[in-house]
Amino acid sequence: MTRVLLIGNGAREHVIAETVKRSAHDIALFSCMKSNNPGIASLSEAVLAAGYNDREKIGAFAREHGIDFAIIGPEDPLNNGIVDSLKKEGIPSVGPTKSLARLETSKTFTRNLLEKYDIPGNPRFKTFASLEGIEAFIGELGGIVIKPDGLTGGKGVLVQGDHFHTKDEAMEHCEKILRDHSSVMVEEKFEGEEFSLQCLCDGITVAATPPVQDHKRRFVDDRGPNTGGMGSYSLEDHTLPFLKKEDVEEALSITRKVAAAIYQETGEYYKGVMYGGFIVTKDGVRLLEYNARFGDPEAMNILPLLKTDFVDICRAIIDGTLKDLNMEFEEKATVCKYIVPKGYGLPVEHPDAGSTSSKITISDMGDANLYYSSVDKREDGLYMTSSRAVAVVGIADNLDAAEKIAENAIASVTGPIAHRPDIGTKVLIDKRIKHMKDIRG
Image (cartoon, rainbow, N blue to C red):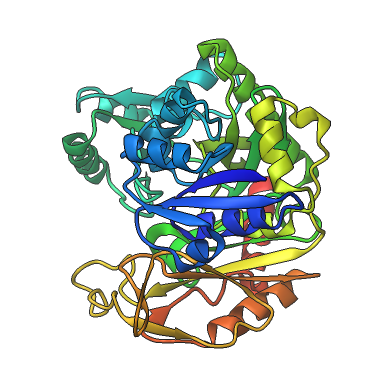
């Protein structure tokens, strides 16, 4: 029997748990969650309720249950060094050490790495520990993006034209960021279409999963504030409608060079997920950022399609034998839509802002997959929290059918909820295609 420890409690970890349990091997799954996810709990032999910085408690739980390896879901335990502490217990992980997780936790580390090793994809950028010099650098760029140097839950990036317009507003944002963070990064703004390429890495070999497009904006037609992600889609031909084959190849090439550079820089092999957020521009593919774990929601687009045994993949990542494994995915389209409280992501002055922790009822999901995210299961039913509640995934031979499966399933959920009905629809896809055609000229 293979005894696996999963750390995390979101919808991403729910789909990871499901994928582990689908293995042909004899699997016993154990989970560490800071809040109870009923989907993960139902798949687990035992559950540890603990914070992700409680390394001693997690280590004791792993020893007690004879864990063979761990899978780290979210970024917080990576940043807290859980891989390092489990390694001291003799337990390997699918996930990088704290030092290598800087690929996500320090935007400065990643930008400097690309610059030092002459890897394509970087924008013009500078990191500032104070306001000195920021105004002059902003004046050199046509459009700018402002980022705190650290974890922000996917919501910390501020883009000119979306979140602010003037130089004075940019300086105000930088000043605010520097109150809470040690530094702020200012970089040039790219014009194009974004996509996610989640890759698996054993330190030497980098293998790509199908590309996915995420939708961060809260409201239909990409309006409103950024969120952790309202949904995502992927196509049956493992590309995206606005991408060329060479775009995906270029993104994969960047990630492979980054994996090699990390080893050259640190002497340590990166083992886990290297999830690149890329943007395709008129001048080719550029890197927006890396994450050191699967995306949420993007994991829910690709893991249900995985034909290769996921436990074999995890073993190959740990053992450094990923090159010997042929990773295959079903040729299906997927659409993931998040059900959220009406008040999710809204400013306090919005009339729906207080609508969060309410009860919901889920009836017939039809052919859709359901993954619990931030929910509270009580004796009298299921309650939302203030964050994303439930992810619904439609899988079919084409995008239109997958979108209908997801949308029909959402209709069976009652309560004060919201979602993005336009994700995966022809109207939104055509807008993406036209945007990219205009950019490429």
